[in-house]
Amino acid sequence: MTANTNTQAIQPVDPERAYAVLICDLVGLRFGDDGRPDPSEVRAHIEAKGGRFHASALDDKASLERGRIHFFYQPDLSTREELIAVAGDGRYDAVIAAATFLPAETVFPVAGVRIGAGTGNMGSRSWGGGSGEGGAAVLMNTPGINSRATAQMVMKAILKVLPDIPVDTLHDRVARGMFDTGRDLRDFPTEKLEGKTIAIIGYGNIGREVAKLARAFGMHVVVHARPRHREWIEAEGFAYAPSPAEGAEGADVLSVHVGLGKQDTQTGRYANAGLVGAEVLSRLNKGAVLVNYDRGELVDVAALGDALDAGRVRHAAIDADLFRDASTGNLSGPMLPYLALVEKHGDRLELLPHAAADTDHPSRVAGARQAVDQIFDVIHRKSVTNAKGTVPSRYVPLGATTPPGVGPVTAGDLLKLTAEECSELGDLCDRQAGLWKALAGGDPQQRRDIVALKGEQLVRLINRFRLISEKSNLTGPYQ
Image (cartoon, rainbow, N blue to C red):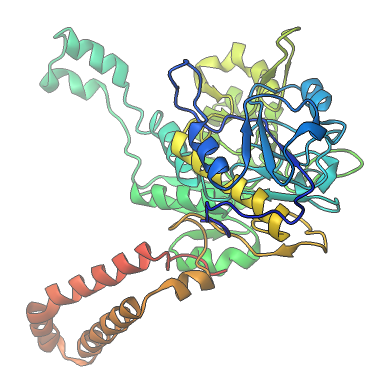
């Protein structure tokens, strides 16, 4: 999934120098024998590549073994003050983070990698902040690693509300033997998810995975993205909306997956902050569901409060960072404004601490391993995969990579096809073409005869072609 997945030890370009990399988030979410999340899978990957793993902070860089990349695992760091204290002086050459917010004052002269999509939390000035524009260091991410996990959590949030059947109440009455299906079930009417409209803002890896799942549930899918995506959105069978407000028009569900956008260097405000405001929320069907499993700042919280008051939004599921200072108890992070809604609307809110994708162990491990590979490539080969923003001239950009089946179709996907696969796809096309042409040219009786004789064969050909196409990641937009 990365430009370099080879785990064999490699010789560094500078055998006289030791590199230090800070890992400030968990890289294993399953618990080990010590009762703590276990990082051993990522540790083994680092060591197989010739690196060194330290379950401690960096003390004296001069004492490190030269010719090695040393990874220092400090997953308990969270507050601004803690991060500036350990990484404000440039002692670490690079950093791997997931949800932790890196303040502008942190210094990483070589690179930073965010496990997952988006880089809004990667605020170090070393690479120009979350946009990765204009810095001397390289900013990267691991797109697609947790796209499916996040999309599945989005659907879980929706399914808690739609269909709106009171599962707990029914379970309780059934368990107590206090229910008669013939008499009582009529008192619990509900609506199915099929036929309802979901508006998705953003057509990145996560937004597209949500769209595919929603379609599988029979929902009408409307997607807002930049105009250059329109052709591919419509080619996949989704409706295109030129603006977020137009996408929200008449929607029963609104799901946000657009990212924070660029940060203004003067104000610190992100381009997409408050994107989901009064104008967008007012276009929703009354009683709609809002899911923001992207960035907390994307929603205007005051406008959401008004929409909850008016019943325009009946349920809001929000997933955003919340940090608590262990010594003072002070809270910070983009979830903080939402807490003001809890007293009045708590029963209609579901607030998660940026956990929608970050609690999936395989995704976190895969993302961490990929981040390690990308750090090795930057240091040893001066090559950059999944760059965000500008890439300094001393590095060679290698484009983007995603897990199989996630993200756009690329030239690489086409070139990976074996001769046998290409031959089979061509044969499937030829055989389908003959049958379709026969159906197009016959009179009604001839068409019925062809369908009677060849209908099953045609559908099998269609299904086989689709199976190979999806398995080889040949469906969706082309990049």
